[in-house]
Image 1 (cartoon, rainbow, N blue to C red):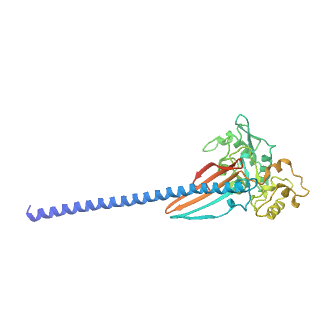
Image 2: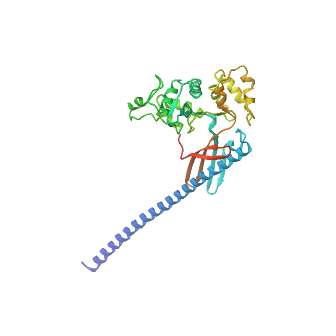
Image 3: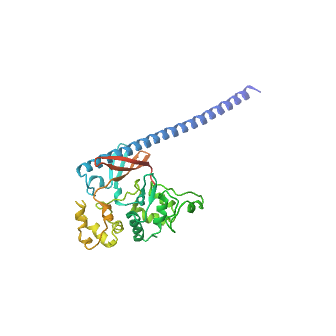
Length: 325
């Protein structure tokens, strides 16, 4: 091999080395950029989560302030009920809404807790009868009350022909068993016999899942105007049309006392059971916050359930990051 050939081979080797180094450098640069971007995204997401948690603190402050100013009543004219709260923050924004959970039917009210910590359902309870009427008013099969009661109660005996216990679920694919426990989220209804997607969609605006067995209270000051069925389900002889009139006539600040509500001309001549009267209240115990934070590329949502304790403090019952549609 002559001198020129040796120089040519050396040049090729040098070019190959340069190409290889360039490829390695390009790959490392790409990896570094991805890691920098990933770190920035993680930082933004973490910041968004902290802002979302900050929304909880803000919600508690608002609720406790309103409790202090008006310990015996809650209404839609109070600060906590303000819709569409928006706060610009450094690098993004924070939005949130507080709703009164005592404006809907508590699915867990269908059972009561016994001394041995088991849950029992009764067809004689105000909750059972009210839910049955609500289903009827919404054009849904009233038999759905039994399958829900069986899902919640602790025994393995079906409420009746329309009930559903373990054997009805064990034949499904995949098979599972009745929860025999309280519902945490309304979305769990889709697991129960008869609760199709259409049924759950129809029910969802009217029901909620308060984590307390036998708890059924409706705040007459916060029931949505477009959901008069919630009043009609309690008062048998009150038509949906008359219930809608009652809610439409309600002032933004609601009723000052229950006597004013029961003495309404719309209710004149209607016999109202004592059990139904005990459900209607002017104040609320449970509230829910839905907050979303956006910081750069980081997004975080939080849903938090609060409970008012001893007319003084607000405690967090549970918190869930992300959303459930």
